[in-house]
Length: 155
Image 1 (tube, one colour):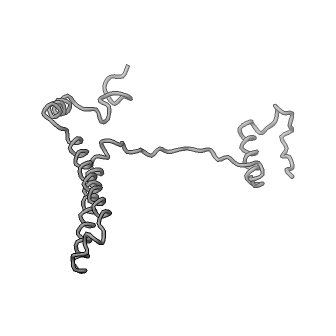
Image 2 (cartoon, one colour):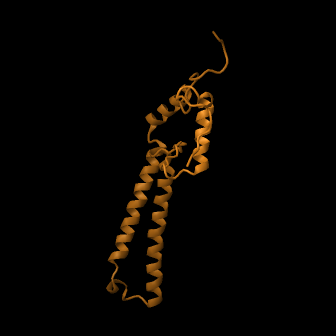
C-alpha cells in the first residue's frame, strides 16, 4: 500500500471555504448587509432612477419648454438625456459587479465528435487504407474467411 504522495480525490476541493473564511462570512452576515446585497440594492436603485428620468423625458411636451429660448431648450433636453444615460450606466456597472456572484460563468468543455460520413463520401485511397488496417489487425486476413492472402481487386 503506497503511503504519502499525490492521490486522486485527496485534499480540500477547489473553491471550498476554509474554517476561517466561513467564520468571517458568518460574522459579516450577522453584522448587516452582505456586499452582494449592497450591489443589488444599488443596481435596483439606479435602474429605478433611470426609468423615472426616462419617463420625465417622455412627458416633456412643447408646452412645458415653450417659455424657454431655443438654446436653453436644447441644453435642458440634453441635460435630461445625459442624466438618464448616466443613471443607466451606473445600474449597468452595479449589475456587472454582482453578475459573477449571481450567475456562474460557463466553462468550456472539449467535445469529441467522431466524424460521421456517408458511405459515398469516402475516397478510394481512404477505403484502401481502412482495408489495409483491417488486414494488419487480423494477421493478413487469411484464415477466418478462407482467403488465400492475395490482395483482392477493388473496383
